[in-house]
Amino acid sequence: MERRTLGSFCSFKYGKMPEKNRVTDDASLYPIFSGYRIVGYYDESNIDEGELIVVARGVGGTGDVKLTPAKCYLTNLSIAIDVDEEVALKQYLYYYFQLTNLRYLDSGSAQSQITISDLHNVDVPIPSMELQRNTVATLRALDDKIANNTKINNHLASPRSVTDSSPDIRRGKRLSRISARRAFSASSNSCFSNKGAHSS
Image 1 (spheres, rainbow, N blue to C red):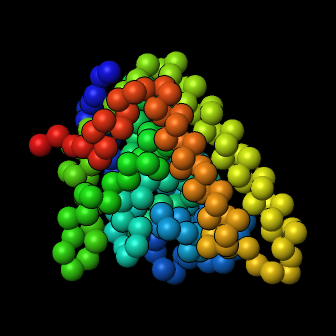
Image 2: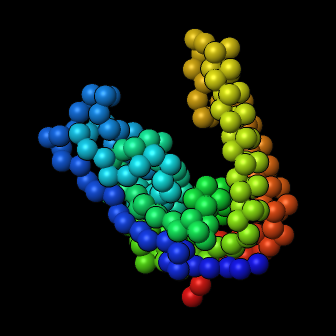
Image 3: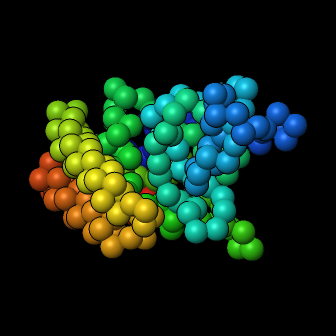
């Protein structure tokens, strides 16, 4: 199977710090997304929905890879990854990095940090486009099922709040990771042969 560095088929850019006097709680505007959560609303966006990002700074999440939840304003706590989808699907990379996160890249000492230079050298397996699509379809269906179960749990548990730390939600996430690993293994025996590997 072909392996390539992210820098060979992706470009990167840091999010930006919003101007404080323009931040509002008006939910009709674009959400401000830090990579961790929505922290307010803004009158402009700098990234579309469903784009690949990596949390690059902060405590407890540096190295996590996510998809933007909406067209939004991405802050400087995260780095946007623009993927050449002739080579790899954004969602394939998203699911791959759910199992092989980028926390090992954290180069900060006093403060956690990942840089664009770090991301350039990350090595990933690139299966055929057909296998990427099949893997994404399998895992997206699982995510949809978990999301639906979460809604049901929220309804049944009302007024008790169900959070990400609730047993049912933790169980769903654990099953998601197990199923993801199986799906990747089925689509490519070598996807995890060099987990977290990067070129020197």
